[in-house]
Image (cartoon, rainbow over the protein chains, first blue to last red):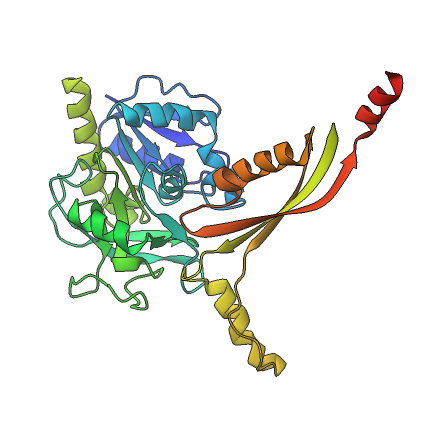
Length: 237
Length: 97
């Protein structure tokens, strides 16, 4: 099975994502931003980085790139799309997932290992996770998740909040000033999915924790979930 | 055809956390300024549109402001006309006809 990883000018975690896919035992396919052709892949990852320099707002210029036409069509057909960090920002700006990612409340670029907890284990992106907190790196300046109160309530009700930042005791870091909530995200949201459940974004980097030699393979729980869900989608099609 | 120069002023929506505005505000005591509050930091984009009429030019800018220059979830924008000039090309055409 083939899974694509988009490279935008300024992507910097695309090779890590390709590597994580290879570790998961699938054929990674590099997709270039200038073409809407996804080469028949069964799933797409939008990787971390600074697409188009993140000028204007993080992710917005990438939204209008040719490859995003292909990704939007693919998502509309039910194909699985995972946005990591900058990829999450691109999905939010493209309105493929709800909400927006604001400048970190601290105004600092946050680069450290944090803990997140999957909020449900029956989604395409979490169905191979154990449910325990996952430790992964974050590296972003604009990761403060924002949506208005009505949208946040709807996300909770529909199970679209996939990941929350958690404290050492495993409780969600709901206070935006809690150090375990590294960017001040509302309701400690680290990742969400669309209503259909086939497009998801998160700020932490599972692909950078995909092998024990990298410090941990916590991220593989999410990569495996995504890969196996994409395989099931391709088979069912 | 004429050229219309616009500014699009983008600001965080009221109620949206604006850490940059807050950082500026927190610096004010260092300047011994105590009479300034409610600082908001946004972005200003200036651009020129070639069009027959101001209304057509403004419609182009409005579309761009909504789709690209601002994110309506978190920002508001205001469009300001800075200058309207007849372009050299259209002047030549008018002269030639």
